[in-house]
Image 1: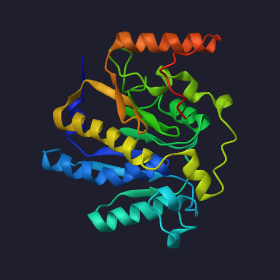
Image 2: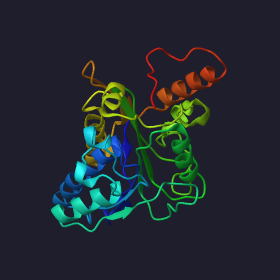
Image 3: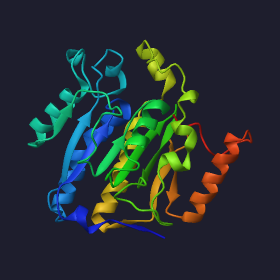
Image 4: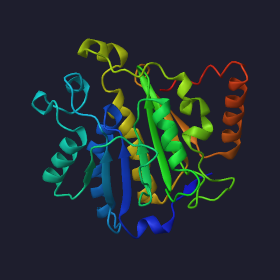
Length: 272
């Protein structure tokens, strides 16, 4: 089974909002110009129109595994990244140096790419893209120490009607990932050593490249047979998440048993 792209998204610029520009978000941002160029080369009408959103400023710790220099410490992450891309690629993309919240408008967003570092933040996104909203896709990325997951879903809203083949979102497949009570203190590590101990190098760009490759395939061929994957750099493995309603029902059922106190399937990593 496969998912086919709406022809509307081939006839005009695709409006992308990247929420969060830390490890995953900055890696996604770095790859989006390549996706934009590839789409134009293959005849897409407009490529991407990208907005980056994050209220954080560059810290010394960020300079260890994120694409920032010590000279940029104290500056807005999104302003630094967008200025850099616009200058190098000749683009006119946008920076919003604010945190995503329940007041953020997503009225003119086709693809929301969530790169947040807490379940509480992911829950806010889930609530915003569901219901009276026209976001076509929500691509969520999350990671642990040696890997992570990405899931491309179609939120149940005005744009995506209820159907057996609608791509299920990360919130539907893994409800624990939007449960704020499972978050830790949410505080960033206070040193470069701690940051590297908490996460292996190259996890973020590896995860981002897999996610961008999925989008590239969707826009190049118009359809995909998978809509996410679990990636682990410690063992060099990527396990795709197939477009399969039967699989989705099974995953949802396991999640419900988990919330009743039954053990979660051992193969499912703790994704945060």
